[in-house]
Length: 376
Image (tube, rainbow, N blue to C red; front, top):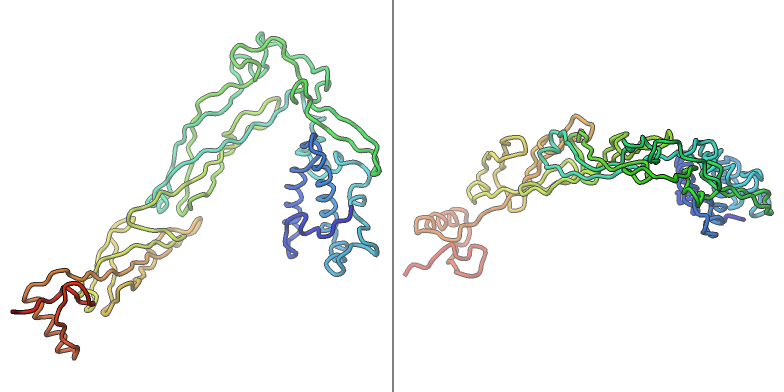
């Protein structure tokens, strides 16, 4: 199989680092490995293509030739998947590359081996909690080893018998001769569903599942500066494993609640403040309520509607950092809707002194509409 563009096959840019290339290959190889997709013939072809693409980009000479000439050897398609696989079959390369995580590693696992599943939970924090960080206690459900049968799954506590189909391996291995050599495929044993064991008299508590659902509680630390959508990991707080398999993890997705006073943009906070005409024209010093107390905001003389006043260091902290972002305060100039005679006279005098046309007043239109009334 000739790969026309190994970068496109692995989904990486041409300036990808070796670690990025390796990570992309690992992900795709797990996804399309024949052991994982026994009923999908297209997955096997995709796995071959992914393997060949990695064989090109992981070899500095082949990669350099492809980057320069668009092929990896004198003839298009030469030096492909066969060089990388060595005729050993997909099971061997997958096991060699991924180690114990590969499909072939199941042959060395003890009967009943099962890794515990990871779990997912969610929690909501306020902006005040983003500012200071918070300790949150979560209550959830998880699967623990059955206390009645201690994970055997049997009613009397006896050791389950070995599955006669897979002989305790949990997988069924088939070997076929192909043009590439001997190809070994593994599928989960249909008799025992991968446990390698058979249970004839099931435990009355777990009904042979070997685990039972129980209430769990965990305390997690949400650091200052956390952003909505970030995920925190609580190691070993997922479902229990069986047969020596590791316990899964708990992943907690953090959501930041909307705040009525502030909008958030990363570490920057935004809010608005109402100013009178006099405050905007002459300048002033205000105190507004921040997340952690009163904040003094300086209003420069001549502030215009929509001007943004910056207060440094009054935003949110940077994640795992010691500095804080800024607070941006937008100025809203409040125009009075009704004026008494004294106020009208002062504004007319202001216009005259400023050399501006003296407004006659209007009830509906105009910039100063409604500010003045005609004297009768």
